[in-house]
Length: 282
Image (cartoon, rainbow, N blue to C red; front, side):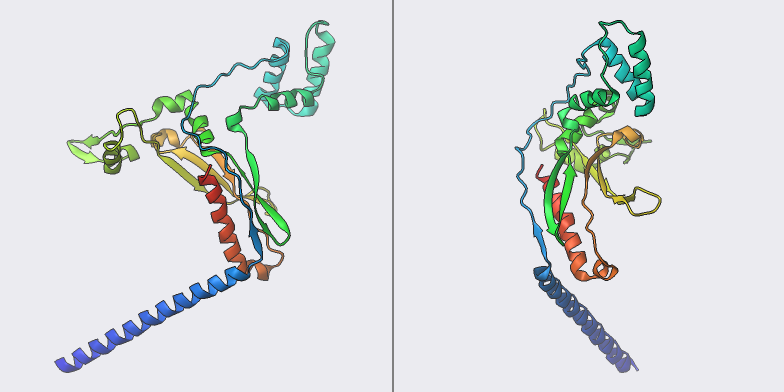
């Protein structure tokens, strides 16, 4: 009886080993097939010229805007504050001009006023557009901002900066070590000890999810957001504690069968990785 059990166990082990070997062989065959398919995929990756890497972040900003006149600035502030439509804004502008003195400078039109504001946009809030792939005779672009620019936008918010924690901060409850934030962790403590006293840790958190932009479901985007682990959870959960980093390009298929094909899925994966390669180099 014992011998039978041993033989059965040995047989089971052999069968399990055979199954594992079959799984390994199948995975290797799939990998080889993926490589062959990838060689046949008709796409072209486009080289991107990377700007110089920033070595420091200057979070000092100036909110002063030089408008052509005080009245010009007050009028544009009114439009922005109440998010007025162009039709409504033009009516207000027309009325303002009718009662204003001759020496008062106002926008010639709402369109001209908005264009003036666009020209005043701070460089670190501007997006770049670069082509990264060609597929099915269509060029796919990455709309992005430099990572340092998004960090600057976050830290330029005084309310956020005041709550940021840059040094290791142990947390205890009734004498027992507990963990709530990244900066409470042992990794933070260990890493901080390897840095000069003047250096701080900046924890970058990225997250993304494709989203539908219309009720019909035909328009979608894939935004990527950035926030910092230095911001405590309760503050990081507020809307202004995260900034838009980029929009990932979404690969388009002409047919349902193409969309389900392994060739299309491999191209989609390549496009995704190319987009993040560009992001990490900037």
